[in-house]
Image (cartoon, rainbow over all chains, first blue to last red):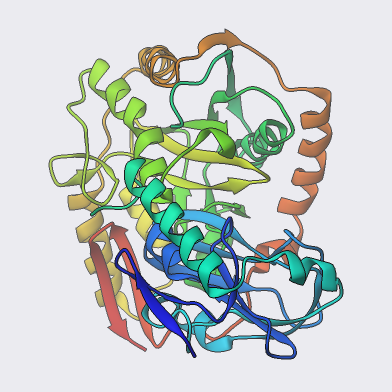
Length: 149
Length: 270
């Protein structure tokens, strides 16, 4: 495991990311494991509810495979890859706060067997690219007032 | 918001509608705005009392037997928050904008989209403020029930002007472990949830003006599109489907808990 501190956020650099949806993807595992990245955790607010569709769901990239709620706002949990959801993390549904407390560990969301290898190849990955992308995103969010200093 | 928008803000006042339509109409607009309809400010008042429950909440949080005996239909909405009692003493408003027009965290978006409603309250003589929990409040009491969510790719924030409030019915819909918790809940609700009997027409006009100014849009009276009306039929069916109403599976929480308003809860061990 490799991680680095980027402008106050601890980011694992050995994982792939869908930064638009703030999801990390452990592409080295089979099936791949998906979770919310620390920047997503920060901007989502305190999660009060998390619901994931049961295993067996086939989804296309960008489809909702669940929903989450923070401060009465409901939004989708999407999949960064097309594929079959094989496992969902029951622990985070029982305790959504786990996502915030341990986003890369116990707070993972679901596992998926990808059906489109080309999508996997297009994810953000590799330490230099991950660091640069997070730096840019964090700086932008701060300029926009999305993140407090 | 992502700067000021341009173009029209559709304004639809549906008047008095059935309990079912007081939910499905604005959901249909959510899908419509998601598919290209302009940002929309809508209003309505339910013709009869009913109960609405948030997307993620367990149906057994409600005293289903009492709701049935009182003739209250129950509808599960697609936005957040808990189970609530709604009736004709509550004038609903909904602001619906494309998600691409919003910026910041969801919490910031809610505050941004509730801000003009606070101004509208103040315009009709209610010295409301948006508190640290993003509740529209007067003093320590909440005066507006709100919820929000993404419907398709549209952000919808809903709220209400409460001209009168039936605290007893609002407390009675909730399943409680014993009479003690029920009494506590009713007592706290009477303290922390308050009606502000302002004129809904004045409130509506102020809200139109304030939302248009805040979003930089020109208010224009409008109607639903054919596509939205077709979606409305589907939503009517979905909201009356027992499977949709049943909601998420899973065990109840270890503790019984009911929120009176943000920051005020009644808790009991199961």
